[in-house]
Length: 431
Image (cartoon, rainbow, N blue to C red; front, side, top):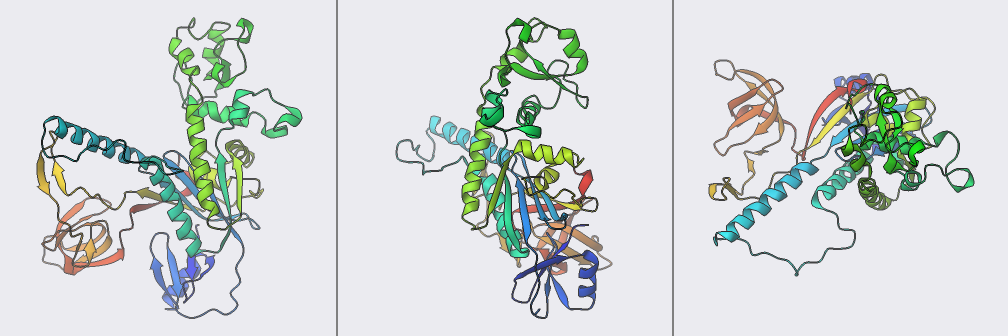
């Protein structure tokens, strides 16, 4: 089971403890709840000569979901695991909608913001807002976790795909990687490129073989652009035909696409690495091939958080993962700055108030409402809050949405911080 973070009276991080130990401290009133997600307690008395062990924070950045884990290298114990789901696609969609609205208003010669083209310069290291949001999410949680437990090292999967190994998979000897890791970069890249399914019949959840789009007997090479994945039946039926002759010209065309996606992911990971260096912690880096090799060697399934704890050469030979509960973190942002809502034609339909906080609550707060008997909404309700100026709020619980709850019956559990949380059984969490 995941550990509970512990802070001393001066908010300094101590070694995480077991949930049973945390319950005893709370029952004896020696500690109080500091945060709900991740669950953290703060001691009410000072601790002299508190002993801490070095802990390692591990990161597996992904395009949609990032795996996070905290591991005690000496004991092989996983103290914390999380999966952060990013909101990059929603940001891209919102920017596209804003762009369409502004262009339509300019064409109608209505009130609009003047276009800007040559009066702006991009700073060095600029990234699109969707990618910048992903980096900000990761760095935010690195900062939070450093405040909650004694992290002394960071491991990051720096390069997901090794483009040198992809371009020249036959490279061997002293030129490049040797031994048991050879081939893992290429296999991982092909699995990602072809969506872990047969390129011809699109079947999933079956053993896949690396197959040549243009067979070597017909002059094909071992370059990544000439390789794909196929099930055994399709591979046998294709024999020495090309993909086009086999009736799948789209596979041959897709195989010729450049390694642009791999290069983009690599550039984003380098930006994260440069920003992590500012923390001053020692950073261990390794490739996605090493991560996959570590995971398969330990017999672990494919999930984001398990990939994270398998990053790097420092991974212990034995990992205690059976009782880990994973914190699922969904980035939802802090609202938007659009003061005027519009319809699909770009005309205003509503105006928003500048005030966000009403009666000390704001939308997104997690609250507990104890409504007395005799009222329509009587009972105990726990969930996310939707505030109104009238003081009658809505609460979205795990089952439904309860409307019209007076603010006097609400007590805050955790303030809105731009994320939504849900706990999941570790090995039940799949990518």
